[in-house]
Length: 307
Image (cartoon, rainbow, N blue to C red; front, side):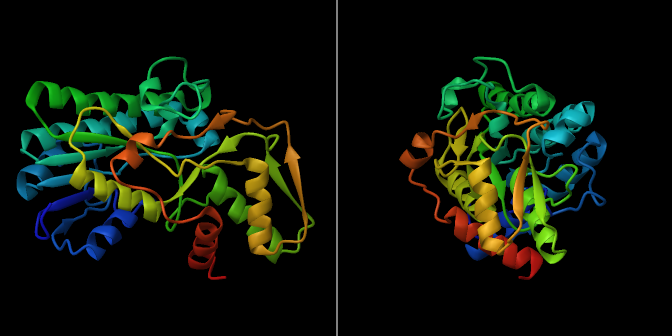
């Protein structure tokens, strides 16, 4: 990409999309195209076709998606499958039709089998059953990866895919009904602190292991791979470090200075027992994360809650 290349960031108001725009601007890219969902409905094939025909972007970051946590994924199963398949199919197909030079598709590590060997290696895709609670979303994302590879095989498109680990950062979703674990804990413990509540309920046993990456690091990795990776097959993006949900909750409790108790509700689901990415491929390409978890949570808390 050149500094004046026409770059479309789909999903620029989301956590990853907004971080991508900031990263690109910080690197001197000046011709960035964005559209809000009200300006361009990516589920609408006709609207997407018209946008690409008029704007003719040279590079596309496909960060738009319908996302959520365990409750949202398990409750709105049809919506997660349909909307994500439509969004990515429309953008990928019309990128091909309008001769986009390169596209980067963002998936999710939920694509891996529930009991895949840890750490999660790219070769484990489609080797076992998926986690039931987010299976529709995972299937949609797998379809997106395979679409990128298929358009590369049939049409020679330079479409690449990346698989981020659990992300957190500015513009995250803090809705307790459909957010991911880190922002949900951050909000619950913050509200308990300001309301002087004696305890906070944490879903599950606290034993599942998770990996987290700051969205700023995620965006930097995406821009790096857009400039340096041109092969078939996807690349994991993560820190390669893990923490239990229990330790995460206590870390947030410490950062926020909350003095109440944490109570683990074992009647709630744990989800996948362990999920950490193998970042060997990414590291070999020359990129590593830079924002440590504790520092990243402090940044997010300060920027989001003004504390």
